Image (cartoon, rainbow, N blue to C red):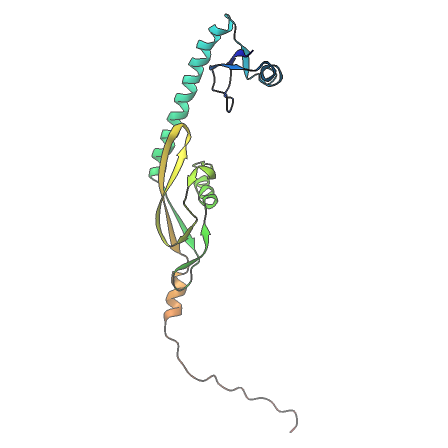
Length: 176
């Protein structure tokens, strides 16, 4: 006792625009029709499928083009983070996907932090290649570099200091 409907928009777990699907009548009546996500499939509305498929193809082509452009733009990107380190070059804290997404956003590349792939947060100095899952199964890659922010401070700390006694300060006596 399923009802055939034509989807007008993407419905998670059900299908994409212009798909002909069979669902239970209550789901159609209570959710799909009131939300304007689908129309009941009749001979007249089946003609609508061609128009919906054409729009879907145009939209998917535009999304694919935008994703590929972003992937090529990301290939040229190198993000450098200046991080505080100890004398043994151990990073205090870490660089996470949130930090990387914020830095990409300031550079004009909007990427969801959940789409950035890191096995674990970056905790050591060096250069890393980071993968991003973009829409339409396109993948982009860019470089992230972690540099020590206190290189100059380390150079100053390594200069030898003169070892000597501190001068004694004469105490003023009040009972003379």
